[in-house]
Length: 259
Image 1 (cartoon, helix red, strand yellow):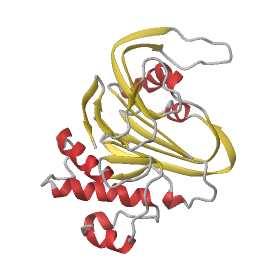
Image 2 (spheres, helix red, strand yellow; image 1 turned 90 degrees about the vertical axis):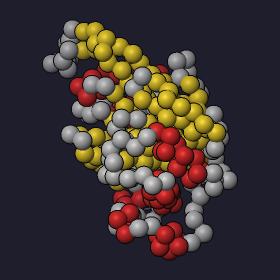
Image 3 (tube, rainbow, N blue to C red; image 1 turned 60 degrees about the vertical axis):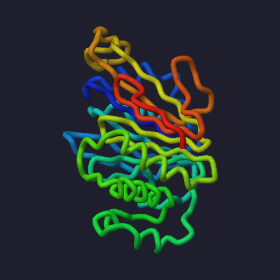
């Protein structure tokens, strides 16, 4: 089993407060054996991945709450013995990518790699199907005459490449990406849902000692969006229907289109 959480927010200093508002829709995962977290920091994408020594109960919102970032993607897996290079999320330049569900294994891995230009092929580190799908998406984006290294690709081009990538799937899966400004996702059957907050009330500082409750302050400017794999969709969250791709920014939905 795999789980994913993607987040974007207007203020990198208010991640914890925004995630607190999303908490009801982000579930604990029991038996997690690997955790990965990719996040934006000073316009760079950084990734931390770690196999867990023993099965743990992990919540991706809590994993991300200490970050100072505009965007992150977290991924959990309950699979045993996943090699570190195969852990998600994957990154390339300004992109972070993670997949959930049954990601199809290409019939010929060498053929997929041969089709990639050298600057993308060099980025493939592991053996997972999800990593190949990510690079196939980037290749499709490039085929649209898009500069894939540009930090602000039009959302309709990204959705077109994402839809073309998912159109080849015949099993339930979900693909999630962020460029730190937007979240893109597509479901071919995996349960994905998203929510948006507009203004939060959060702590001015962290507790200094046990029992200390810092003063809460209103931050009306703070907008954020989270997208998560989830079992039951709770109030305030919108489902990404199977066969649908969405583009999101901090103030909500940009566009949805069919696969």
